[in-house]
Image 1 (cartoon, rainbow, N blue to C red):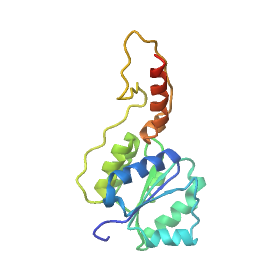
Image 2: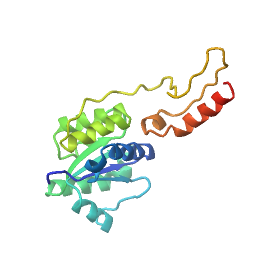
Image 3: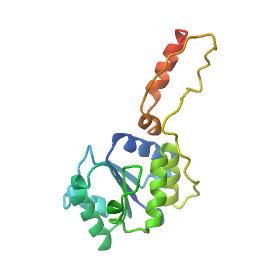
Length: 196
């Protein structure tokens, strides 16, 4: 690997890609060598020019696969074969909460590293993914801090007197962990202006 590893992050969900985008931004210039690819939006075919460019431009491919292995098995197998033949190292994670040994077996990094990385992704959130990327960049990092599966979110800049009515807003945890809550904050602010 070069002194600053070039990392390609392959994911299969918009929310995870968004969270990684924000995590990379948190790293400033140190995140310049991190490439993001949402396979749900930009499929990658083994042997294609984009696939060859990915292999040429990465030292580590960090991949997270949601759904059936049948849907992406050819690509995962090709990445694993390339890594075993001297290409970029491969870290393959299940996109589910529980590790998947069939997916992890494609990895060419130690299983301990795979499981450690899986902990950051399942903990969720931009802060956790930032810490995970810091580790791979050789920067000081901290352990993951899990985000609860459900809870109450209160925008910090809104004070609501106890005498006001209440309105509950439901939104997906995935929005929160991806850092995509601006619309929730805006709606809460609008309701607060109306006394709710």
